[in-house]
Image (cartoon, rainbow, N blue to C red; front, side):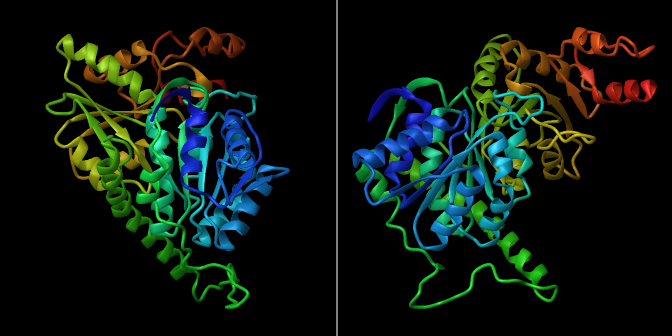
Length: 416
């Protein structure tokens, strides 16, 4: 059914269609409207046989989610930013126990300084937690991905984070096609847990494992991650056949045939990039976009096929690793190891700074003209702000325009 609704309400409706038995909620912007609406559905009886649990913190929300899932019910929660960090201990426990919890991360910058706007620093900080991480490029994609996430989690036996850009998507009103309950019931069967706490058949979960078996436990967890690559594709094809929409998957290519340069992008910036690529194509540019849909597990083979024989690739990232470089780009480099493909990183959109059409064109021009000479380049930077802060450091100034990370390192050492 087509509805003109807020993204958060669309997610709440998608979650309700999946009939969770437990929803553990603690509000934090920009996630709040999602759990508020799910709670409303439970209260009104629209979502039946569900325990909606108001928690006193994000740590409690994840802890109760672990208990609920271990007790044998389909479980959902949501968070963002500092809330995700507060959950961190439980996040690792959930994956280590193989619990198929689904969690929305309404991605938001991590403070300090305090910033409530969108980037990917929160979600990517948990990339090694053992959760599957699926990016959404639009609200329709987010609605569909949440529904697929429950099936993927339950088939693989691992929890799933559905990553959608805070405010940009969560608070945007647009037309969404919400599937019917009958459609989802035919797609997502009634939950049947494979391992859960049952007083009639007592087992231990999360017991101590010493050096004699811990490596093997981690190897089995890694094996599940590799299994997830096939499961994501299988579930995606099944869902696409049901709805006729092109949501989900591992990667998605746009205008990539014969491209001179390809941009690898995750999240809502893909939409902006597609519009600008259409304009650039009309001007004679040959630019393709690779939308990264699954970050964990990372789809190395699918990424290699998507890049193909293209010699220039720029990874647009909305987060980075302090003291190092990009986060997504090194994975792309691993995918292309042994080829002569040139891979560069552009950092933009931190703390909610808008990635606009001009940002995309600037990155394309820099990449095509070999101006991204360093592994990482900062774009859309206001040099005046930097120079005002560094005014007392003799000889340290930045010019307006893209700033290479080697220039940042050089200036820091000059100051020291």
